[in-house]
Length: 121
Image (cartoon, rainbow, N blue to C red; front, top):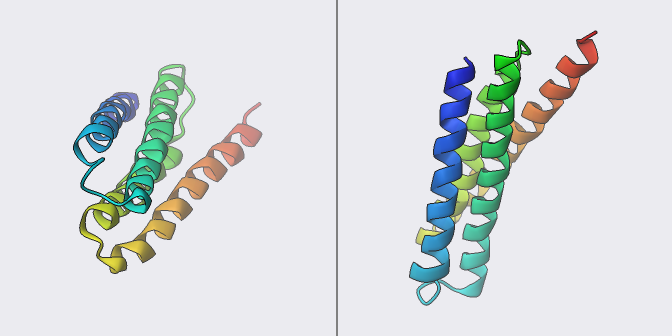
């Protein structure tokens, strides 16, 4: 499991750098300031949780398993950041209601980690 979380973390981190650069240079003159901010929020949360996945992968190598947290972080990135990218790029409003589901996935991921840490001796 550790390899999967490390791999996804590295992929998502790399993509967040690419997407952030794309937004700053390629979308700056094509999107409104609001849409650019929405896109940037997706990039930021993607990077935060990519680093969280890398942490989970490292902890798994040390024998601490946070699989539930890792899966929810992956889902959160796809739903939260993905819906923000889609909303910013297309302007289609129905992507907006998907974002809180991704945010809930992030909350569940961190809550699951807290519960697991409290259960450890």
